[in-house]
Length: 397
Image (cartoon, rainbow, N blue to C red; front, side):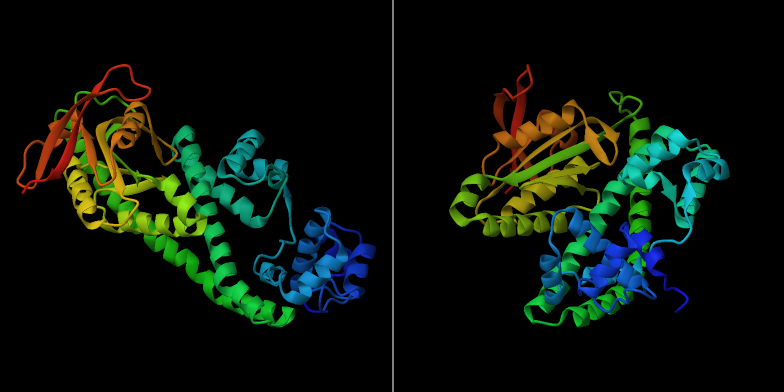
């Protein structure tokens, strides 16, 4: 027996089934290359965990065996990259060791987005992470801010992990399945590729994080300087930003006419065009369907971008853009408040190929050599009692 191999009883405990069940799976070929009575490798145990989950969802052994033969369960071998830790700690032990209250540990766990059941026992790696948490809080970082930060970490990194898995499946797993590569050979090839690539993910993400952190620290300094010099409307806890919403006019009709696949492909090209052309000061906060929310500090730069984007983006359905400036509340990586809602209503009044801005934006931008504004009158926006003066922005000839 190798150093990392387990007995049948130990393997069954990790898979969450009885030893008799695990032995039967091995003998029936549901778990390839498994020794039903003797040593169990981490690869075989990882595969057994996937089989257990499939059985709990009602899949028959014949269905699972067929999926194994076709290579559709090759990810069971990739799970060997994340083996179950041999030592576990109770929440009482972790609380005593880190100095964090049990209720706070559970709250942090759910705020990150991890399953509540995972907060019942912890690995050595989990305990080390909670030591980091305790150090951050002991240093004086406010708990309310830390919980928001962990929520952003959880949401963002779960999206990254989801993208890594899905892209690996689309561009590696599915092509191997179409080529008819045998299940075990496919699993080995995927495992080798994943083992080579995954260690590179953390350094790349760390590099991107540091670059963006540097950028936003500089932007925050600029924002505070501008706040100190005359922004009397801003309140504590609010920041003044320029908000732009950009979407596609007639997108629903386009989807009906061209089909969902073509419409999705068009949206991806549209969002990519927006992201790649934004000024350095601005960034995409989120996308909802065909709508993109953009935030920046420099109103002139965003309006200049919007007008230029409309001249360059000549596809159909056409883009429409609405821009507003005002104080907003920042929370969990997103922006909220009345002025966010107002900006989203402005874009709804724009036509395809048009850039509409509020009077607040015109006041902030003023005149210029390259931009001009044409008033379209006061407009009643949905959800707002008072009409708002809107302007069409266009390049000055």
